[in-house]
Length: 45
Length: 457
Image (cartoon, rainbow over all chains, first blue to last red; front, side):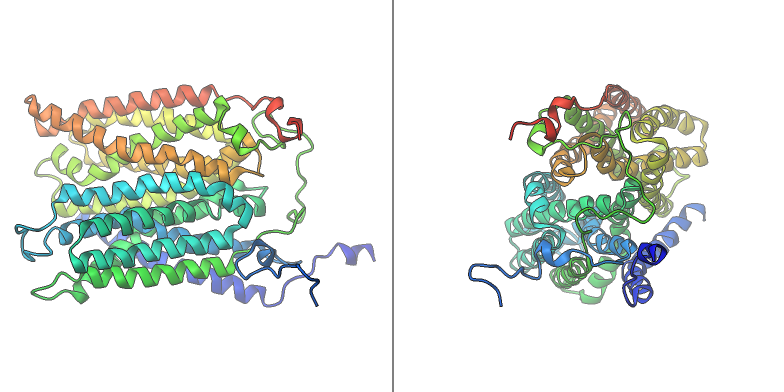
């Protein structure tokens, strides 16, 4: 009983939400970083 | 049924944002990132300066066109309003919670772009000062502080990393905004039209929507929530308090003003360089660093500015905040003093390496300060205290570039070669960091008489 009560309930669909939320925030940032790396490469040309 | 007089919480109210049992705290940083990635656009505002100086003449500035010096005020007003609004809204934010604050920031920041679009369309510069400068600046300030306390509460075991993640977004925002703005202007421009007003309009809508996504998904933990397996320290470590200091008391303590100067001096040293990086690289290495390569240098600086925010704030969780700032100041002094030598040796690699580390510590200074405030003043009023501390950023935002530009011009006017015109500036920056180091070393825990528990009720 005590072992069961110490387990926290997990919200439904949490993995899907995690992937979705991080994609929403991460994709624009990844696009910006890719553009910046393209610019930064000019320093070494 | 509700009893008479009972108020149903609105969708923006704090009560509606309290997370249920089993909520995963890693869902919260993306909410903060949505806001910070948007308002980080401020660092890229300079991409509009040149097009806005040719709205009448199109190919070149004509009579009636705005001057670059006039346009420079837009960013300055926004940065000043960032500090002022963060200072004023901090206490309100602590009361209403992050969702209402994020939505307000979205309205101000998005609305600022729309008003500015009207200003460009009507060719009224004061409307852009009012729109992007005042309204947008308020959006910057409120948006910047809105997720800080929430993240610290969700991550009591790693507050530096959590706030570093959000504030990293502010550094990364410019990387999105700069290419996006250039492409939008290219899409809307024609041989007789620069496309700035339409770009402002589209950006206003995009940023409003993106910030609203952040407001929609943000959650605050329930009262007394702790991460699984986390045990709060029973008593305060030397520089980490478990007590709370009220914001009105905090700003009267020497610790607040020491940290104000720590932030101000760290930012002053970095911001002047960031704004002058392209010209500085070309002038210190004439003929060897071209305009295109200098643009690459600026891109690298942006990357390290962003990465430093996460790296240094996370490191501060391991080595402590005061030690982290000591590293910023000591290493910063050494690197600034090394830059003129790198130029004399003709070593571009050393020059670039020095500035990449310097700029990473500039970003790190921003992202580590909320956790430093939490350590010194406690969690309860950290949002409001952080808001008031950001006036240091406003002061540095005005002071830093002026200092660098003035010293450079003074040197050139007195016959110093352009390649050597930055030498004195570098030594002055090192001197500023020395004062910052002294302020940081003087930091002590806040006296127990200032703790909330010791205050008369």
